[in-house]
Amino acid sequence: MNLLLDTCAIIWLANEDDKFSESAVKAIDDAWFVYVSPVSAWEMGLKSAKGKLVLPEPLQTWWPRMIETHQVSEFPLYGPEAIRSTNLPAIHDDPVDRLLIAIAMAQQFTLLTPDHTIHRYPHLNTLW
Image (tube, one colour):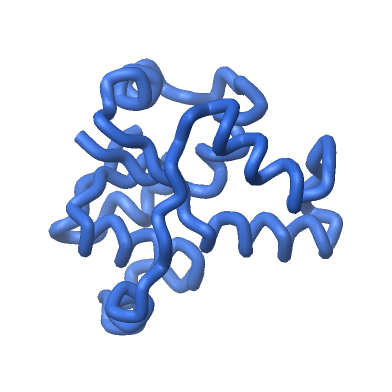
């Protein structure tokens, strides 16, 4: 299984937070690849600028350090996925989540997220 981490999952992984479910921890340990998206970096940058997210160092150094430390891979956002995100059912209105959903669907990744709204999308593999 290949995983794509929701933004909150990236933060919790980096912080070694205990908010992960047992199945989420097992999925990360057993995954062939664990991916993060630059969409999450963008979301984190926006939240940091508004003071809603405090990181121990600037995002410019935190992001690559997190990727290296936790041995995750960055999966790019492509135009077809961006377009697909605009055609998804109106279940979730958060543009970042919609982009992550579209990436996961297009690549057949399992999206690791605690967001119950995301779990309602048909044809999307989610886990938490």
